[in-house]
Amino acid sequence: MTHETDFNAFVERYPVYAETSLLDRLRTTDFARLDRDGDVYLDYTGGGLYADSQIREHYRILADGVFGNPHSHNPTSLAATALVEDAREAVLTYFNADPAEYDVVFTANASGALKLVGEAYPFCPGARYLVSYDNHNSVNGIREFARRCDAEVTYIPVRNPDLRLDEDLVRRGLQLLEPGRRGLFAYPAQSNFSGVQHSLEWIAEAQERGWDVLLDSAAFVPTNRLDLSAVKPDFVPVSFYKMMGYPTGVGALLARHEALAKLERPWFAGGTITLASVGASVHHLASGHTGFEDGTVDYLGLPAVAIGLRYLSKIGIETVHARVESLASWLLDQMAELRHDNGAPLVRIFGPDLMDRRGSTIAFYLLDPSGAVFDVYRIESLAGKQHISVRTGCFCNPGDGEVAHNISADEMEGCFDDECVPVTLMDCQRLIQDATGKVPNTIRVSLGIGSNFADVWRFREFMAGFRNVEAQAIAR
Ligand SMILES: Cc1ncc(COP(=O)(O)O)c(C=O)c1O
View 1 (cartoon, protein in one colour):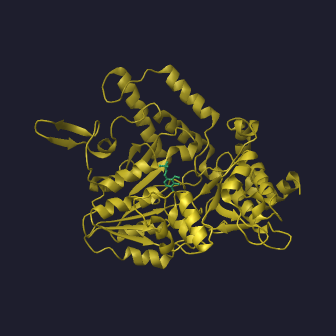
View 2: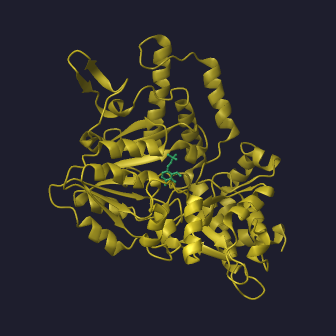
View 3: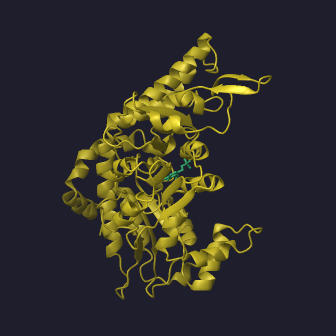
């Protein structure tokens, strides 16, 4: 079938796509570089793409102003402070967060925001860290802070094959918190592995049971509305480069004032105190976000956050959402339809294969006519030769990967037998494959603001090129 025939069938099936034509216009202006270089970018969950106009607007601010370190009161410092506070206001406005309820702490990225919570959460003995299998490693890593303080760490498993959390198991987990004890419940609004969107209703339910809720929103907010007047998680980490491509060095922790006040910072740094003494060896931590922003924030990068968020608002995140949803739905259908001549499927999807309660991130691998798995790294490399950018590996989400590929805890432990010898992901994947025959590798494609039908069509054509091909034929 030609691109044109497929496109006509696509728009007939997804009439909402026509309502997102603004993004087609922007593809020829703000994102024209994609087509100039023939790139098919399919790693928006890895990093978003910036619009040309964002960087031009940012450039004008930098070219026209004189900005000093915001920790002073001179005119250039005050000018920088104005930029920082404008960005903070833009973040609150974008997420519809009431400033009386939420604060914004600027960090280097979402991981920096997560670490702020992990290292300062009062994980005393008797406290709990309840966490879903489906999580980025930067959320998993908080368990080390919890364990160091003898808090109990409990994982809620995801189910195979849809990689969703079982509602009953979530409720059972939430019942674990004893009255009067502290507990942190952490899960992602959208999985960076499978694209699953977990229920936001658990936030209020958990809070009613005494939990503080950390909603990892890094993979959700680039294509979905997070309205903090409708749901009120205690902690919300985000990375701005995932939302609008630029700047790459800024993230934020949106936190309820009350929740932020519960945190106990393990140190102080320049900018976080009202006063510190060497002689008296004491310090006063500043209240609110000031007490959490170590050193100097990225004051020249922050205006780009405000610019980017206003850019997204002007387009409307619902427009982006509608577009990627229809494109991902088409791609999922195509993946299900792709078959070898012997009838065997070409694609195995990990996670939901329909668009219900999922985002536009798709994890999968390709199978040959006998069911053997194509080496994902070879697929990535062959895609690269056609200027198609996909992601491979485990995407820093080992929990989903282990469940998706049926890797037991015992099998994983084989990769940690000798604690002194660091084993790489590649080594571990090889060990497991040799020992069990399972192939614990995955390919991920994800869509975003610059995506169009031609991108997913070209990727479908790329996958179709492996019809009736033996996996061995592309092995290195
Ligand atoms: C769901 C999720 N959480 C956290 C992170 C960490 O983000 P960063 O690497 O920007 O700190 C990512 C990055 O991919 C993510 O997808």
